[in-house]
Length: 299
Image (cartoon, rainbow, N blue to C red):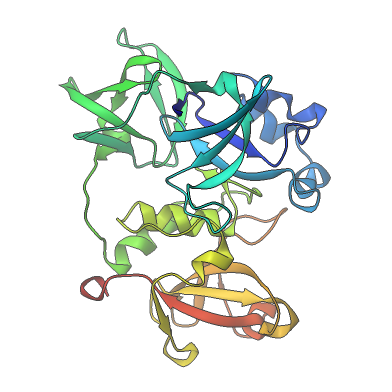
């Protein structure tokens, strides 16, 4: 059975038992994302990874496949997030209260959010839900500077300054970089796939998706996407992959090449999305793979 996400950004948990007491704000509908983030210290954030609590996130209006149900929980696959874990889409558990089984689907024409986050408004102009970058919703028209859209919660308005019409076009390298630069300074979030916080591969997945390219969700899968490129021929918007054991072990990180030896990436818990020069860093030693995912006409 297919269903639509009714939360601005819902966590996909490893198990129904994964959420801790201080994760309660993310189990509500709508989730209190900013409250959850503000209340988590470094240790609480790091354990999202070290204790394998969160797998990924799904956005408002995104479609999931419900594979099974257990009480208040649903085990789902996310078709829009390719993964070797499941051919049907990225798998994990989420609260059933954050889903609508009405069969709501995005359709054309559609608009999507182009800012890190933006508010949806009720048709009377009152603010409703703060949603994320890349949230995509069917559009039914415009009025007085707003897009009129259909959502799993009913008709809403989006400010035209916060969104754009959805187009199936592949962007250029410069477009991908411009999109990524918009998130400089945003704190890292393990499993994050929204304008409220990204992990390393979530950022790459999202900025490429915004420019017409579908990448796998995780870095190790992304390292097989696109075309192989040489380490001595890195071009802007190439994906740079880093492995343990000075590049000989398992891939654990991905960043976006900017040119001139620089990289944009979401580093790790406790840090924020940044630009750095590879030379003289641990990343210079760990660089193991370069992939070119931009179409040849977009280079």
